[in-house]
Length: 260
Image 1 (cartoon, rainbow, N blue to C red):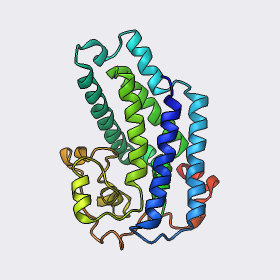
Image 2: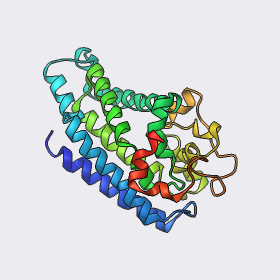
Image 3: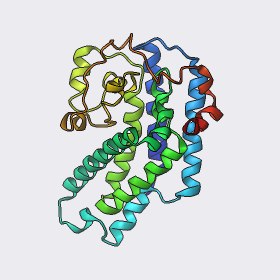
């Protein structure tokens, strides 16, 4: 699709810079680890993941959706629906897939060893939203392509979902303070930083909750919603109790975490 890369990269960097600026002006928590080191490490994880994806899975989701449409494959290409309904259904179903994928990565021991790199961060800010192990990113892309093959979503919906997913991951990890009333209103339609921060608590009953990335409804529907951390947002402990040392900010140690 024309301008796909420009749209994705442009929106990513715009939201990343906006979230970073908002964190500086309206911080929610005081950070405990060196911010520049964390951002360099977290951004490096994103770059390594992108390179690995291009080497192992050169097929991009939007291009795959176009291919499926041309060959009339996938449920939404077979079932006659209005374009707007196919678009909305595709985004909702893909988002629910990401929710269940997130649950799976917490519940399965081997997958958790990959995913815990995301939770080892002892602070949480916008850069945490791109801190995922490259192997996890590859597995996530395989699942996403399989879902696209089954659904046959419109290419425009896939692009919109990719932009939404990246943008919301940056937004809901941001270390930004919203007034309580604003947060309550936003939670009706999107996962807020306060809602997702609970998921990064060291308490098992809290980090095994609030799995949603984009829309806040799945946690409520499937019973995994925790509205607030028991210790409050400023006093809560972020990360994992077994990895508190700042040495895990380094790129080699982050990459080795699944094997420790």
